[in-house]
Each structure stands twice: as C-alpha cells, then as structure tokens.
Image (cartoon, rainbow, N blue to C red; front, top):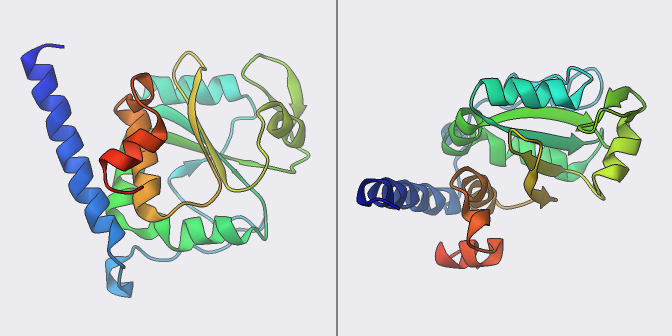
Length: 190
C-alpha cells in the first residue's frame, strides 16, 4: 500500500472511531432523525431503502452502477428487533449518513411469498431465497460486492456503535484482513 493510500485509510479509520464513540453515547430525542412509520405491508417505511426490482441481479447492478455495496435487509412485519433497528439505530444521523452514502439498501421479507430472481438467475419466493441465503432471523443484513460475492452479514439486532462498525468493516474492506471480532476489539467495542 502506498503512503498516501495508507494515510487515507488511517484517516478513514480515525473518523470511523470518532463516530463509533459518539454512537456509544445515549442519544436524546432531539438528536434523532424523525421516526419512520409503518407502511401498509407492516414494514417500516424508509425512503432510503430501495424497493426490490424483483430480480436481485438487477438490484446488484443498480448498486454497482452507483458505486455502492448492495445491502439486503431481511425483515418481517411485527419483528421487535426490526422496529428497534428503524426506531433507534437508523434514526441516528451519523449512522444513517454512513449507510446511505456507501450502501444501496434493498428490503426483502423473510417469509414473503413474492417471486424474485436470486443472484444465480433462478426464481424463488422470498421465503425460499431467505432459506438459500441462510437467513435465520430478522433483521438480517447481507452485504454483496458488485460481482455478487457476499462479504459479510449482520445476523440480528446490534447496538448502534456495533452496527456502524459492521458497515465500516464492509466499506473499508476489513473482512480482507481481520475477523469482525478483531475489528470490534480494535475499536474498543468488545
């Protein structure tokens, strides 16, 4: 790695650490973005989550076209942990800005009956795709690079600082040289 790239990488990690420390502090109501409302299908409405095209290959291409990483948010109506994700963690401006800047988010229903085309071109129901993707609970967030490779996933609810660390782990390529546990430990979160 060149000196300039190493300095830029260290600067990004330093900025991320500051944001992690800020996210570890309790947020007051005035610090949070407006609360989302439940949509007609029982999932939390979020303007930054893109509806699936029905073809995950097209969703992946849209993410790649924008220079972003595809983040598949698996949720279900009535999920208390999904509610916590949307009503607490993702209302923090620092976290939301990071997520919307680097990721192309698409939401899928863990137990949905809609047919979608999976990344391999085969058609299944959302429920079947969830099984194929090893989604056990909700929320689960999968991260896919432009070639479709899954590089990380967040299986379940996480504190805001841990959630941010996971998004950074993917964005900064931490998965290439460290375990997520090591990543958290380096940030004082473990």
